Length: 251
Image 1: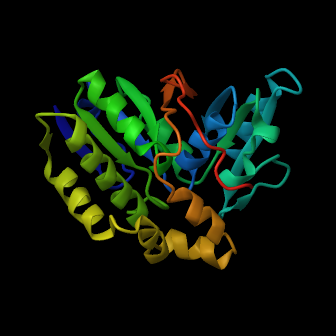
Image 2: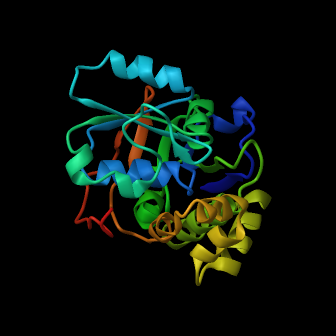
């Protein structure tokens, strides 16, 4: 079994996806928000790229069953029900609903990787569960960083390293590409406090300026849930039965 990491959100060579299980990471904040929504009872999440696409998709679903979520410039989109703060996705708000979600980086990355054999959604909240699910599948793994505005995002590379380190604990033998080794070594620099990687990153600093320090703290929470979302035919649902979960800090 091999672990590879896509460090930047450029579309990969299609051959790099053949037969691989892909774990998508947008730690701040899309994949954390997706995991949180499903953890708190959302029926499904539909990732879309454009704001108007989101409205069109939502309009095709039965009234009262759907919520629009998303951000541009890290802020809630005008006319949308929710932003991209995982703390907004409370059980009271999302239980039984389908979330149509558009974000600057994460949902775009999910669309880019549609050709993969299998796509899982990861973050720190489900770190151990996503590693175990990937290891059980036996496929080679590509951890895909959503990045920021087409470039590297420190927090995603560190998160990818955390996934690689978790895979090493449950998948043997595991070979690493150079990109996977780079991510793992960077993770080791931040392992004692992954929140520091947020504070050191450009995106994390932007969220702090916007008064969203609580989002950073929540996104750094490890192993809060056993839910592992999978993306099939453009719709994200839990790919593994949920175990005991916590609602986490109140939103």
